[in-house]
Amino acid sequence: MTNFENVVVLWESFKSLFKNCFGFDFRALEDIVTALDSIGRKVNWNRLDNWEDLDDIDILHQVLNLHVIDDEVFVITEASYNESAGPFRLQPHELESFTINHLDKYGECFFNGDVAIINLKTKSVWAFHHEGVFAYIDNI
Amino acid sequence: MMNEDGGDDGSKTITNSAGNQVNRKLVKDQDELLGEAERAAGGSLDNFENYKPDWWKSPDGKRKVEWNPDGHANVNEGPHVTVRDFDGKRHGVTEKIFIEGQEKFK
Image 1 (cartoon, rainbow over the protein chains, first blue to last red):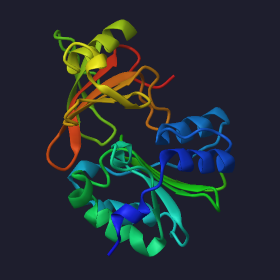
Image 2 (image 1 turned 30 degrees about the vertical axis):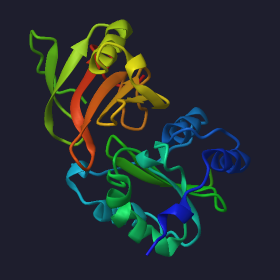
Image 3 (image 1 turned 90 degrees about the horizontal axis):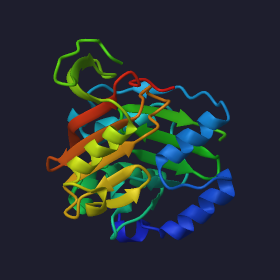
Image 4 (image 1 turned 90 degrees about the vertical axis):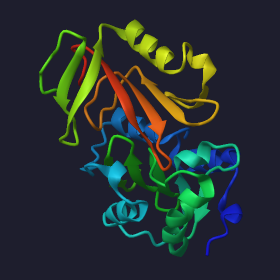
C-alpha cells in the first residue's frame, strides 16, 4: 500500500529538476505540448472516447499500453495543484495502487483533466490531455 | 470539429472530437469569450483561483473554468472557454464556448 504522504514532493523541487532536465519551465502539461509544438516535434496523440465515463485504472492501462514504465516517475494530476498535495514521486510498482486510491485520498479521480507522468532519466512523458487524447513522448 | 448546424441563438450543434453530438455556444470575439469565462466565475475570474495557466477554480473547488485564448494544437481546437462542474469524481464539461469562425486551431 502506497503511503501517500511520502510520495508528495515540493513544487519548487520538482520544477527545478524538470528545468534542469528539459530546459524549459513546467507549470502544467500544456507547457510540454507547447514546447514540442514550437520546435515542430510531431506527437502521435491517441483518442480515448468518453474517457470521463471510464474508471481510472482502465484509462491508466490504456496509457501504459503505449510504453511500459520501469523506472521512477513524477506524476502531476489535477490534485497536485491542491494546497495539501504537489507532484508525486512514484516507483513503477506503486502506480496502479496510487491511481486506484487517488479518489479516496484526494477526493477526485486520478484522471480528472491533464495528467503528466514524467521520467526524468529518459526524458520521457506519458501525457493524458483533458480533451481526451493521450501520448507517449520519448527523448524530449 | 464543427458539424455545421447553426442556430439563431448563438449556438451550434457539432460533432465533437469524441464523436458525440454536443451543443456549443459561439461568441463573436476574444472580448466576448473572456466575458463568458467571467460569467461562469460569477462575474469575475478574480472570484476564482488561477491555479495553473488558463485554468481557474472556485473557492470550494467545485467549478473549474478554462479560459484558453489560444486553443489546443493537439486536438485542433481554437480559442475556447470550458466550464466544468464536479460530479463527485470528476469535473465534467457543463459548457464549452468558441469564437465563431475560429473553432479550429490556427
